[in-house]
Image (tube, rainbow, N blue to C red; front, side):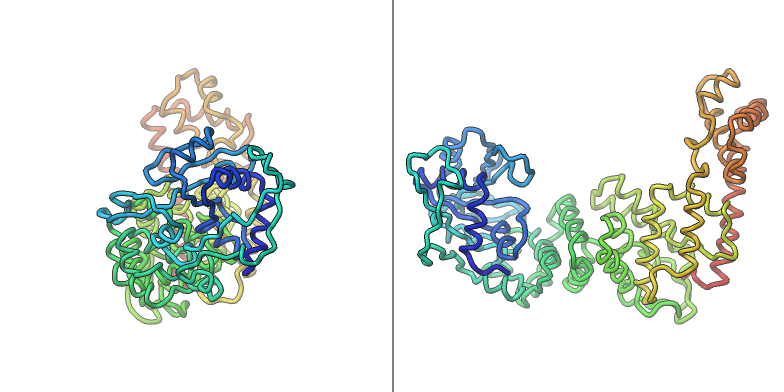
Length: 520
């Protein structure tokens, strides 16, 4: 960690967008401070996600100094547009020192009153590591004539160490050094003001790899019920950010211990303490968390991390028996339905929800070399999609490591991957057929309708069974044969063909699952 403020000032002095904003405020007689997460990340040696400046200038005074600015809130934050091409510096937020009144809705202050000092402003912040301020007044201007357009060359750093003093009334720097998340002042008051801070504390700890100090942790546990005042969209945003941190699995464990998990994801809580069969050494909940841990370590994307955490969420509701021989038949199908309900409840985007649910449903795919055929692999690709198959393999690796096995990819899984590579170019979807709906309509002289879709479905089943049939000549001949059937008859024929194929594959899968006792 960089504990030398002068080093941070030197770094900031090389960012012209920040300095131009700071200089113009300072030359107008206002105080200028780096604050919050921006300063925290600089101390930790990272790159700030965005840049925050606090000042005693009012929003009106800031706007007069910066005509190209945006003020669309009631909290004193003005967005100053810059000429930067980088997304993190296009808008620099400058916020007036403020005090906050009561939080009736447990989320927003009933009123915002502007404060006179930076110390008053820091006192209303959430955590000590975010309640540090660094004055930018120690960057002096050499050429006072250049008051409008100040460049890096016009600046010099004062060498007087007193100029580098921090405003740190709550010991945030010490908490940064010790890796602690601690609420500012009375933690119950802080969480009572804004209940979203309950989740933010966990997420920030998971992001930084910090522990939550005992009084703050106790307050989270005591006030966990306040999270129900928060909009689902806000909870979703914090939760998804948590999943993408480097210590997401530890964050999930903290959510469980503090009582937040049963209010956000009660379905996942159902697996706490639930034992599994002889193929597992961990409870359902522990297994899910360990699968997430592996997904994080491998830097898998968000949808694979979510699927890793939720892949066995259906087990508690599908468990039969107790002890070493208990079973969880069909838990992946139960889990798929639960994932839709969970992510819909959290207002997660539909496309993300659908891919997570798909991965959960298909994560029990079979890869026994003795039984898996190229035809079966093509059907797997048909169900999952070529674009998703690698994610499914990643999920299976997380599932295996989460079970305590030493290898993420045993020979059987590597063998299946080789088979997938072999058939990836085979037709597994209607768009891969050598004839399309327009060709069918032209050949039969019919208009668009259900009959066209039914013929495509039958053709696809044919070529999945035998890819060599996927030629225009063969398919057109088959189209003529199917075209003589009535629409209802054809649709029913297509359904039966698909159902028969799926039943055959399910029977094979079931036999293998029973043989190897992997229905879990």
